[in-house]
Length: 105
Image (tube, rainbow, N blue to C red; front, top):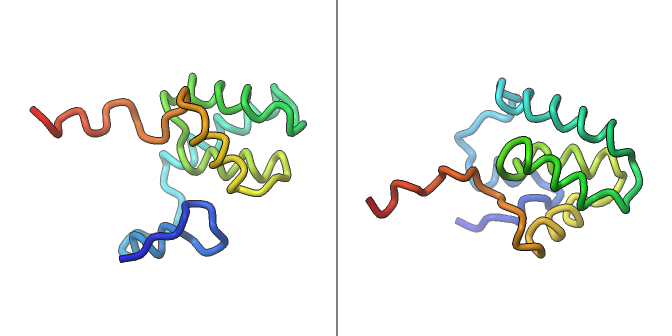
């Protein structure tokens, strides 16, 4: 199976995980609400991208995809730019901290 980058125009979830429904679940709603609070505090200038990502990661322990999408919409920048910054700097995590902890036990 070929997966697109998470922020390409077509919905990457529907391509990589077609069995998932695209409705927002409670967890995604909570992520969106917390992200909106952070965005309102820090403003909508593109220069605030890294501080915004740092605050989101401090809140959740990683950068959830719905949060990164919300940041791109709020700052009016392409989603791939947010993803590029998040993957360029090694301080950012794209998976929850406990994910994969049982792989080698």
